[in-house]
Length: 401
Ligand code: NDP
Image 1 (cartoon, helix red, strand yellow):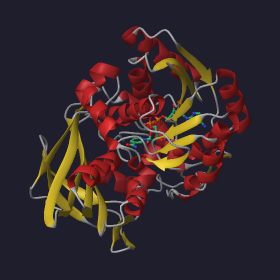
Image 2 (image 1 turned 180 degrees about the vertical axis):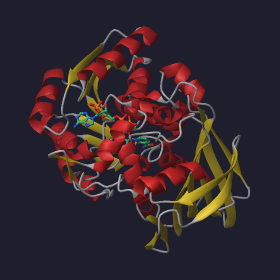
Image 3 (image 1 turned 30 degrees about the horizontal axis):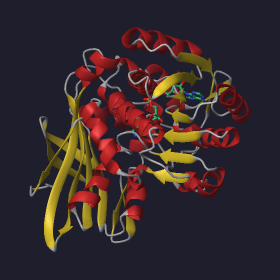
């Protein structure tokens, strides 16, 4: 029975609050805080109705205001703060956690607002401060990063003596019926996918042009989809934590229609993150674009199809080469029916809840800053099967990559 605080009232915050409230024996009191309190109140009302949890409360907070956030934490006294606002707030929330003596979990690594650059160095630099304070920071506990890292940890623990080739494959085989929409925060999403691609090979990072490497991959229950190599943050920690890896890549599917819209958005300057003057005030084109695109949290209704995200791995077991594929498929409609949010929010919010549960029930312990693959994957994967994200695995198959 623990008090927790959730920051962020978007699509992921909706699922996370919902899933935590389904387990009052672990999450007995939940404070949902975000920039816009009315969004927290709306989530609270729906979650109370669906789950009957009686320990929910809400607050307005600017998570970049460290003194205000520290004061809120000191007043509410949560054991852990589950951060599902935006990556821009990672460091200020970690600062407030240190000041208030609260443990920390997030789903995306820190990114400065003025530069689309994501790497763990900023958050790994908190290692000594968290360790000395006796606090735990759990980094990247969504699906990717998150479950993909835990899938890799399972492969290393139970299937391989050495992992040599890791390909994370992320397919959204769903159809939301809109001409163009992103499945999570459009600003963060577009910043991520318009970057140069990058993968790891033989100790080096190889840079590619955006969408330069493409392959048709076959996804369970979905079929064949065009998949593109792009950089994704879990690659950085996985190659560090599994040094036998010779090559690590991340693939994501995109349809031609999506790529055409994206190209136009870029060509006309709407993906820009430098301020421009408009009617006497400065605006950031990408922030303005976010305001006119569909809200990812509202895509759930009539969203058909499934996501399929997993790891395809080649390596050595008992002196012999082995192939292995582990994945989860998630139905957008089933996610919506349960929580009112679509599959991408669901596949992020459920792992964040399970990560919080792992910590609060003593399955994941240790003072310091950790990426999720550093913890025991077994109890986490057991809960995924129970709490809405069942996974499957196969060995000895053709990996395609
Ligand atoms: P949304 O944009 O739907 O929600 C973000 C929420 O954060 C909004 O409620 C927003 O407030 C709030 N917020 C923004 N800035 C602040 C601030 N300064 N202080 C307090 N609250 C703030 O995003 P999603 O729910 O789609 O995504 C949430 C997070 O999950 C992102 O960090 C994203 O990168 C991560 N993610 C991780 C994935 C994974 O697999 N690991 C996959 C998908 C997402 P307001 O309502 O006022 O705008």
